[in-house]
Length: 400
Image (tube, rainbow, N blue to C red):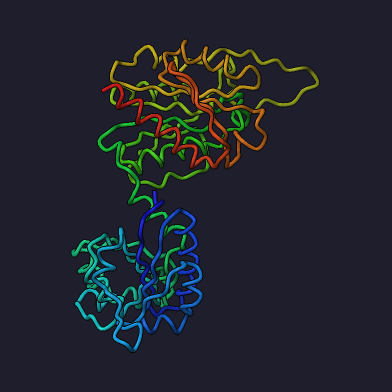
């Protein structure tokens, strides 16, 4: 969501100033236009020529750019920007900003800024822990500034603390999330993710290769857009990051079925992304089954169909999204599932697309509904999640 956004990047005199190059590269990669404002101390750590090469703009540092009276307007920069990011921000600059000490171009620009201001502190861990720094940060938060929490490290006392500037990609993610459209504000979304495990005995199970990456990407995207997400997850190692995500961990298909039915009546939409086992062993041994010379046969019973049951319960105001993973006659099977289970639309994956689907970071999807189908190019699961949620939002608002 940074495409076309105008960002003023303030750089101060910190050893972390070199990371500003990585911040710029990531901002430009995501489509932003960047104008650097650097303090005199900042130029001791990184050269303006490096920064201007990356931004394709002259770096602003002094009030007057030439001896003929030509000056840099901090007011104009404050009106031009969609956001200001100060990264790295030293303890000295924090103090000046908190107390209105406008003795350089960066602080003057900050005081004139009409757009949101993001601050990424960078300093010695003990300096960050000092009461005066904490007081300045608290004052700046009261002024409405947005802080990007620094990374952890160890203080001189040996205790863990914070102070090291957050990683460039995390910083840019914070800006990206800020500009994400909040078109799901106030909505409740149920999402299933990952595999299910059906126990054979205490150490063995029937499962599949699902990593949960697609479902978690969908949960993060919905949460960024303002929704409260109820994420019912099978056994995966991924962590949910956004505070709007309520995670419910399950193991078996029956547990996932129960968790979904318990919550479905309270949500506006459900996205059934989990790879749920169709069958379970008729009997699950309480002790490990020992190997013998004889063959072993497992009798399998069908699990309850979560999508079909929710399709029966769906009200006119609810939206239900399914997933289909096929190996042959993909669209035909997906359309059958769409109709049979009363889905609003279905996301088709195909194992014919090598390097996508299970355990991959990429996917190539087709979205099918009663109105037709849309094919998408291969992309990351995070970007694919954005395509799916865009379609979800349109479907939900078309109903109202």
